[in-house]
Image (cartoon, rainbow, N blue to C red; front, side, top):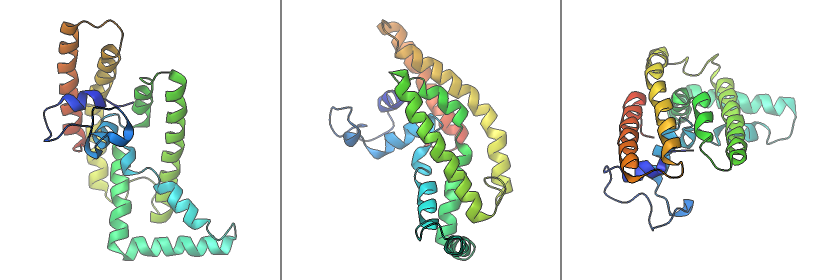
Length: 208
């Protein structure tokens, strides 16, 4: 789902993308892994698990309505009065605002077999929606980043300029991963892929 192979070829790090010559997830270094998810607009390292974590906390005493209200009140108090917790939720909001699940779905189409990509994307989408719901519940906002309208507006204005680069990158990745690409074409396609990676990172103002 991500341009990890292309990121690994960029001359931007002091160490290789993987600890060994392996494509296993456990051998992959954190920075390229996070960078890849940012490029594909999933940005899962910034929010994955937060929604489930909050929901589990709210439901920890069972389904008793009173207990749930008390726990929610506690989270609201923490958000309003404890800066570290507020910073955590606000950072999650910021990264979610830069995500685009509509574009991410197209990156999921890079996965083979296609059914696997669709299954994984569906699970990620459900968790993203849950996280958004839980963040808004705790913060009392109507929309993500309502507490920071300047940043909210900035991201809304920037994203439409980044989106075309994402679609170009998806097309380039499809071509790079197609069978029978000759070396000359591969080099030219990789150059465009590298440019798209730099452009998306600059536009989102985030590598992960």
